[in-house]
Length: 149
Image (cartoon, rainbow, N blue to C red; front, side):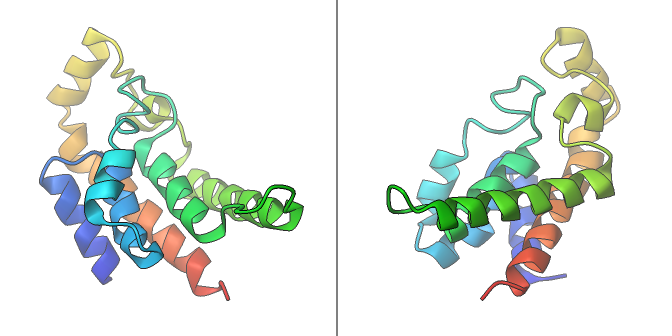
């Protein structure tokens, strides 16, 4: 288990959301403080603002890729393309490993509804499945970034 994975899992176990837990291990390498990582990713957990849309482990991963590859100059189409290409690879691999990038599909219930939230709680999904999704996201990012120059 890598240092990044340990940090991500530790943050998630402490109650930070999936997006925060994935972004933080990579943010510091890009010069972002942990505080800023936690703040910027704070609304993206539970499928973006608890709407059960795109999984927070995915959105946190996309933020990490943006820190590495994001376009910094207007008109830099090459950087924009690189960022989107890496983001697509990341999302495709996450979906391949986990079956979807959508929170409600991954969990098998819609946590944006009271019934779905109750079902997720009864099934203890945030302590069983969600940590696996966080770990998966970090592993995919590490594999993508290892090949980066």
